[in-house]
Image 1 (cartoon, rainbow, N blue to C red):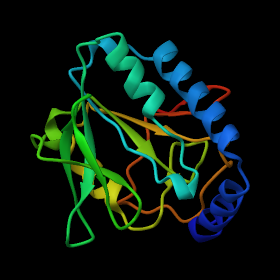
Image 2 (cartoon, one colour):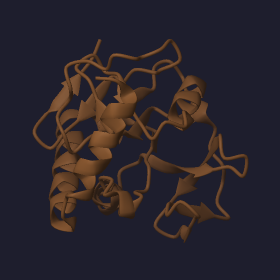
Image 3 (tube, rainbow, N blue to C red):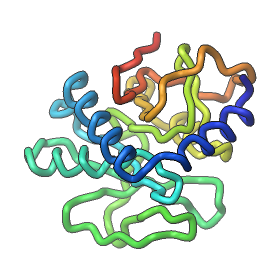
Amino acid sequence: MKKAELRQRALSQRRQLSDAAVAQGSAALGRQLFGSFAVAEWRWLHVFLPIERQHEPTLWPIIQEIWRQQLPVRLAVPVVQPDGHTLRHFELTPETELVTNRWGIPEPVQVPEVAPAAFDAVLIPLLAFDEQGHRVGYGKGFYDRFLAECRPDALRIGLSLEPPVPAIEDVWAGDVRLHACLTPERVWRFK
């Protein structure tokens, strides 16, 4: 299946999810992350804050568990820049003030910026993924450009409420593959 078709199908499926289904799936993603990765050993974890109207998985349970356990890992979130094409990344703490941008994404204000090279792991939003670790996002290339700036050893971990498709037909050289993808049922790992 091609990216455009997968994108439309995934968006349609997400719109049909109830808030309770998103919350249950998101909680299961958190259990997969903590059960499969040494989160406490990371210095920096890049997370995303959900576009709630798109029924994206929420990472708030993961974020709050890190804070509750007082793990030494520090968190950062992306902020879309005025050019509409790039991201900058800022620290997220329990005290961070958030404002919602024009796309419905909560963003931090007046906090330190974090360079992409700092991240040990990046949790990546996506609409679909395949069994080879390719992913489909919203089609703007934000994460492909960002991930290309990260260290090669930074773990790239997708989060999906749905299982993978067998293959995405129209991948290209600039697509950055995942190392793993969490679903509520299991962790998919890619070489």
